[in-house]
Image (cartoon, rainbow over all chains, first blue to last red; front, top):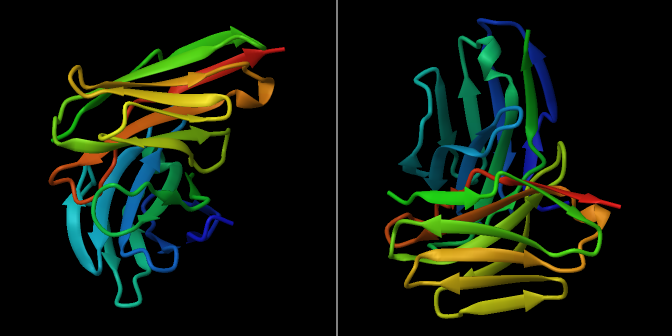
Length: 113
Length: 113
């Protein structure tokens, strides 16, 4: 157990639907990052939150949104799902500032049918 | 922003041989360079990291070297074993990135028994 908890582990849904992925960071970590990893692809950065505030945004689609709550857990909302959204979605957390490696959660495997 | 290039994209070696993966980065302000190993369907895991005030770091069979002048860093795995087979990602962060890691594209390492 890495200390970063992601739920659910697997999700199968139909095109056009909306889903919410949840992440609880490692105790003490203030930063949360979301990444998308499609089959045979690298880690595509989606968004970063630090202590409840958005810090950086990557190539996140307008259909996707995220937030970090006061208890520091984060949710990634994916709407109007398309087949191409099928991927592994990883959440990671890290300590304050630069110079800290990520601890990744086990990921949520999303399959859109 | 930071850009990280990683080579090669695939690497095949015989058990017992050495493997070297190279990365270059663009932002001279980057000061932290971790390496992650990802086995199929699993989360990326930090295997070694190096900071900009150090030129080399070793941990048993793995080592990382950093050349700040040339802005490149490398992962060296000696006496490779079949269980080293995985995807390896390099990353960089620092400066104004607020801790966000920029990842390389990944290297698929296959160690043949």
